[in-house]
Length: 283
Image 1 (cartoon, rainbow, N blue to C red):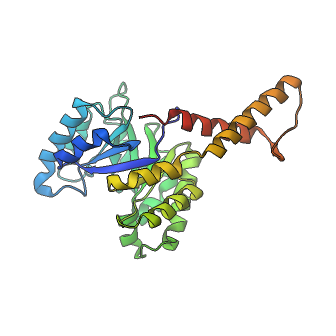
Image 2 (cartoon, helix red, strand yellow):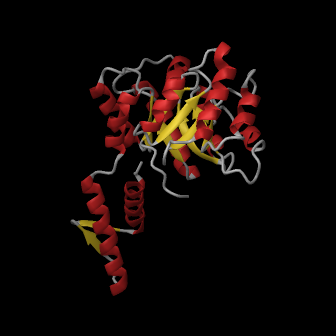
Image 3 (cartoon, helix red, strand yellow):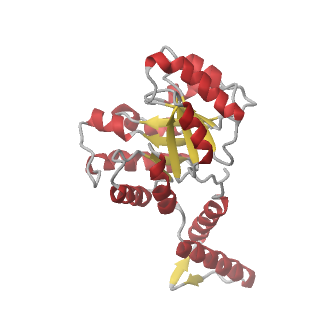
C-alpha cells in the first residue's frame, strides 16, 4: 500500500461554500468535507450538491479529499453515497461505524472499477468493541478515524489534558488498525485557543501510534503537520540504518550496529517507512 501523508486531517462543513474554497489553499494533508454533524437538516441537500461540485471542480492539489456522508439508514445517507460515487473524491467517510456489516453495505455499493476508498469513524462504545472486525471488513477500508467528541459523550468521560478516559479505546483502535495493515487518525482537539494543549495532544497521539490528527480549524494545521512530520534526526537515522544494512548485506555480515544499536529487519522496514512519509509530504 503506498505511503500517503495524513498528518493533518481537516473537517470542513459542506454547507459553507467559503470554507470549501479556502480549503484549496490550506496546508492540510487531507480534507474531509462534512455532510453529517456540521450540516443542519435543512441544509443537507444543498451541502451535498455544493460539496460534490467543489470536488469535481478540483484545485485541491495533492491533498486527499474525502466526503463524510450521513449514515446509510438516515434520510440522506443513500443519496449521499450515490452522489459521492459520481465524484473524484479519494474516500467516503462513514460516521459512527459499529459493525463490519456497515462497511460491507457501503463497499458493495461501490463499483469494482472505482478507486474510492472507505474511512470508518469509531466514535461509540460498540464501535470500539467491534473495531477488530471493522478494520478487517473490506479491502477498500484503509483508514480508521477516532471520533472522540461522540465517544466522550457515550463513555461519560471528560476531555482532560491526559485523555485518561480515552486511553483504552484509543490504544485498542490503534492495535486493530495495525493488525489490519491500515492507518488510523486521532480525534479532534476542541479548544481552538490553546495551542499548547493541541501540541500535547498531537504528541500524545503520535506516541500512541496514530498517523495523524483530525482537526476542526485551519489554525490547528501547522502544529499537527510539525508534530507528525518525521524529525530531521529521525530522517537522518533512517538513512544511516538503510545504508548500514545495505553495506552489511553486500559484505555478507549478519550483524549491523548503528549509533550503538543493533539493527534488524524490522528497524530497516521502519526506516524505509519514515523516509517514504517524508518524501511524500509535498503539497
